[in-house]
Picture (cartoon, rainbow, N blue to C red):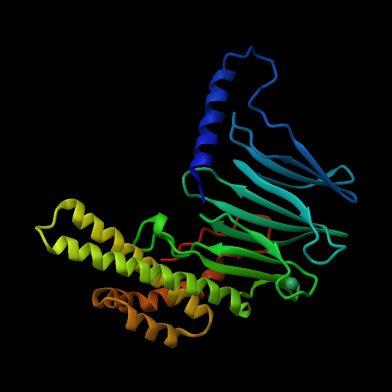
Length: 297
Ligand SMILES: [Ca+2]
């Protein structure tokens, strides 16, 4: 996700580039980031995190001096070697960012073993936050990410929910095993329920205030924005309920806690939310290229 500090740093880079235009031809480009070199056994990884002059970041993997693969994107946000599949494993993690306000993060995992082996390419789109933890204590680290499948879904990006996404390496590839880590999903759902109840309280208070006078544009917008927060929390709570295999119980909770019009909104979208959530593994691929563009709805 983009932050004001990132946007401000882009502006800073842009200013530096403009200043650099006065540098005589042939002089060293002050905008160019120095390449970083990582090594693991016979592998050498050259990382160019960002080249603001032409907007081209790069990760190049070589073995014994022979280039095996080059990943290119405007920005390389992360490139590091971690023992993800066990203490002796050397796994290269690369996170690329396309730039722009919301698009797009892609996470690559490549094993630097006897041969170079792509393990996962994950289209994280808007949500670039990732973490690695051994959640089930089997010596392999799971990848914890956040699913933006329902970003912009009938509400603003700022209100969009973040459903958990857990990947575990097993039977030769990373797989979506989010449903196995019920405690993690349950925590997420409890947080979403608190958000929903808070948004409902604030919505009802705003409606009471608006009801005492003819509704101004500001009061109308106030109500609309609070209603969209309820819708976002509904998708969040129900999405986690589907991951937990507790859709009926979650629907009962929503029925008991939603204002009538929001319950009806949910009813009209329930099938779509379910269908969309079940399709989220389309964000994964196992080659060193971007996954196909995922269009959830
Ligand atoms: Ca594990």
